[in-house]
Structures are given as structure tokens and as C-alpha cells.
Length: 266
Image (cartoon, rainbow, N blue to C red; front, side, top):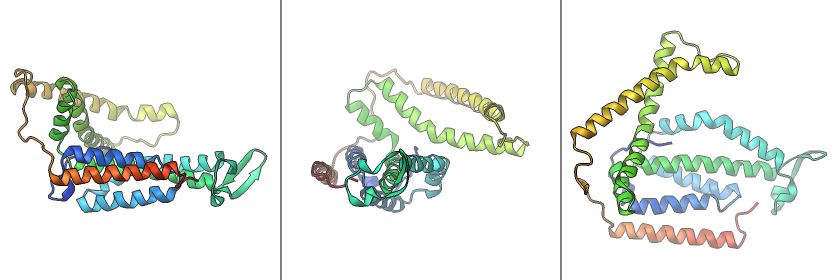
């Protein structure tokens, strides 16, 4: 779900990481306030707009969403079958398409399934926007400000940084093994596991090699020698950052009010 940092001159790129984290948290909270898919669809339209505004690689986002598309479809089907009309409030969600005994397919189940799918879509897109528009060093500074131990901060940031790197390694090894005649469409669970061994072994070797190179690079740069670590570029809040923090705090407050009033329910 993590995308490499892409430099840019947009407003979102210029925002302080703390302002972006506040906005990201506010939008994530709003995703779970409403069960009506209309509101999550509005958030999906907003996140998609941000995606194109930043010029992020839509191919990368689609490559993340494509493998989970069958799971999203299964979620919609299961919710359509398992949520009876009595669970919903609004008349549109109480329509029963099919009923036989305890088994019934309702419009509310389909709508709630769409809500779950939109939530997953928004989480993927918004997290990609956050990581793509923010250097990892800024996340590290926020962790230092929160008094998180430096070793733990470095471990978290390194893990995040190597997610896209390992994704590229997987694609490279996968394509290389396919060229060598490996087949990955075997039938049966154990046959599939056996078929993916030619991918797992090179990935394991590559991960060990990368960790060894990282350890050598850290030693050469004197990691841990200084008691206090400094950053090349110190982050600071500006007027624009405060405006964004206040704006999304208000948006969260409005969401809480609408939730309290029962608006956005199915």
C-alpha cells in the first residue's frame, strides 16, 4: 500500500507532515462514520481528485487494487446475502430481492457491501497520497518529537521504505522465473505453494543481502555514534499548515455531529 516518495511543488507537498497526518486521520475517521455508500463515494471522488492533482502513478495504485479485486467482490456478495432488511433504517435499504427461509438478498446488503469496498479503496489511495507526498525523513522527525526511541523509529521507517523496494523485487523475480519457464497457474494448494518456491528462495536471498548491505552502510556512516541525531531539513508548521489542521478538525467535528444525528445511516 506504500508508494515511493515523488517530489513535487503542489500544496500537499509543501504541507508539514503533521498537518497531513491530521488530515489523513480525519478522513480515515470519516470513512467509518457513515454506512451509506453515497458519503464514502464522495470521499472516493475527493481522494481520486487528489491522486490526479499530485500526479501519482495510477498504474501503481491499480496494481495494488487489482489483486484484491476478487476479495472486494466476495465482500459485496457476502454482505448482500448476510444482512437482512431488518438491520437497516432507510426504505431504500429494506428492499428484498430474493428470500427463501432465513436466506435473503437485500438492497441494504448490497449498499453496505459497496460501502466496505469504497472504504478499502479510500484507505489505499489516501495512504498512497500521504507516503508519496512526504519524505520519510519527515516521518522520522515526527517520531522523534513523539519521544519514540530512535532505534524503533529507524526500524519502522526502514520497514516502510523497503515495502515498495520488495514489491519491485517480487515483480523482477516473477518475470525472470516466467522467462525461465516457471509455471504459476498450477491447480491445488500444495502445487501452487511448490510453484512459488522459485520466487520465495531468491526473495529470501535478496532480503538477506539487502539487510547486510544496510548494516554495513549504517556502520560506515556512524549510526548510533552520536547521542542526539539531527536532520538535514527541520520541519516547521506554517500558516497554511494551521489552516489545514483547523479545517480538517472542523470537518471531523461535522462528521461527529452528522453521526450523532443519524445522518448517513442505511
